Image (cartoon, rainbow, N blue to C red):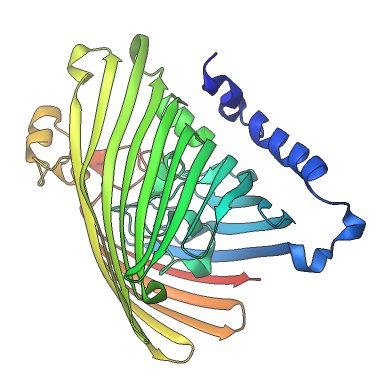
Amino acid sequence: MRISLLWKSANSGRIPVLAALVVFIGGMLCAPPVSAIDLTETVQVHGFISQAYLLTDNNKFFGPSDKGSFEFQEMGGNLSWKARPNLQLSAQVTYRNAGDTAETTPRIDYVLADYTFYNDAAMSGGLRVGRYKNPFGLYNMTRDVPDTRPSILLPESIYIDIFRDMFLSMDGGQLYGQHRSRIGDFFLDVGVGDLVLDSVMKDTLGVKAQISYVGRLLYEMDGGRLRLAITGVDANMDSSISVEPNGKLNVRTYILSAQYNAENWSLTGEWQPEQRTTLEGYVPLSANKTTTGMSYYLQGSYRFAKDWEALLRYDVLYADRDDHSGKKYSAATTLPAYSRFAKDWTVGLGWNFLPGFLLRAEFHLIDGTLWLSPKENPLPAATKEHWNMFLLQASYSF
């Protein structure tokens, strides 16, 4: 029997069978009686809520932004219980409205059991089972919570919103370990399971998740002053669009990440040298090919006052690293060349005006349309290559 049979419920939109069993059985059998523990010391509850406004001069992003859109809301709540010194049970439910790029129903973001099987002064290791967040780059594991992001929108080159749920979470198991040394701390996370795809992904691409792999090695020096990481992904999906009788979609990529944090400023960069996307079993046969994309961003932030932070970022995404301009693609398809790339200058400002409250504003100067949603912009020829976007967001976290 293949292990993937335990995770089939993820494709039908229900709580993963394995995760539900682990949380229930682990909580009921492994934990001591409630009367014997102090819940105030073992249970943590957190949440967040945000509302944004978007305005674009051309094209649509997260709703009818060309007329002004309030269709960007986020909210969620999470609960963690330290059932035993080496066992933690955690869950988070989120709601996200982002125009036609997200389904507006509550989502089980993660529900897992985290068991630490080894822990001493120099090393620790454990296993997470259930639905967990993928350690994709520097920001994916906390990207749902507004005040953990450096800006309203994460860099679309690495964290593209139209494919957000492809790499967000996984139903399966994840081994993790930490080694503390004189030169710094090393963290390793390696997971296997089914990617959790929402209905937008399924309807747009006709895909169904298959066994995939995501891993990250992270190095930190001086408690996070310097952070270096490499992430590897091997994502596998079946596809039912234009295939006979069945098609395969495989995405393989790796990301190099670096961040330096000083007292009042931070510098961050991430580079995806290649994202190799392979289609098999499609009709016509010309659709069966491998395309290699490339992307990167460089971002700086500066805390110029106690509760104020400014941000500047340059963000680049290419669908084909051998055709940066998109001219070859346009000649073959007659579609706009600028639909194959996106270059974005972002300027942002954040203000923590009260504990837990954050107000952000940012402006994007964009060349290209690669990260626009085809559902919101169904006619590529009707889009504009050069466009600007203004965003304003208020959020509260506790």
